[in-house]
Length: 360
Image (cartoon, rainbow, N blue to C red; front, side, top):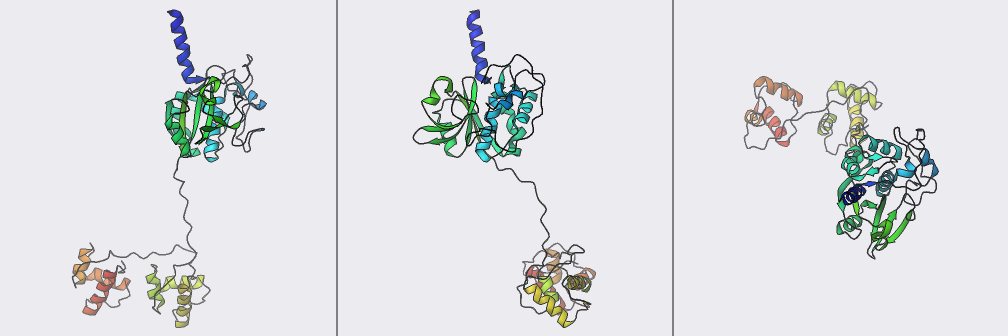
């Protein structure tokens, strides 16, 4: 009975851990050495593979507190990195990922290798946004599992577990072959393998995790301020009306700054000066002043009612309609000496109905 329990414990442990012994683990602790983020592929890396676990340099990559090294124990880490490289060209630093996995209890080089449960329960949160991937599930199953095949057909990749080792599948053909990326030496580094090859012996698939591309929101970038005002497409010959139509201020002081930005000296509002500015605006080539932000015109909400009263219309859009306030509105819209006359009110009302009545 004791012997049976011992066998069962060993079997259960094997289901979640893989040591990936490519060569016997040294019984001598090597010193930890720095290893920079990679910028090129490993020497002798196969097409589509980022890391070659057999490269001798990985034997010197160790971690404080563990006698094992990346060459002997790193297939769980390498398979993850190779999967992301195949998925979207990401180049994770294998040592960084290994140290992270140690910190969360998912990697014990030289002892138990990679605990896939702990690793894949945490890795998306740690690296998903940075490397543009997401996990679509972890499953106990074989290479014929429809979940695996359908995922591969959709362009995803999968890290697979075989006895004591991890590899990557990156593609599927309807003839029943699978594209495999191998970091070590159980299979060629980059090859197509049959269903039967991946269903027996030391390459028999018994578990897989599905990985696909994510669409992380890019960090917002400041929108550069356009150098020119929007092109004026109206028919007015007034620079004031044209500027108002494209949504910018048209006061004399601001027109002076516009004129200066466009090489029009000593602007005073003369006809020839205004025509030059208007022509540039119609061509979409009127430069904005660079010394200060462009004043923005704010409009009242468009009035959609049927009243012919400017007071009622202003009230309907939530604005004040007192005489003093209407005077300010009139001035902002080029209506001089406002006194509440019918023609003045009609002009304001028409602008409000068009959504073009400027707020003071």
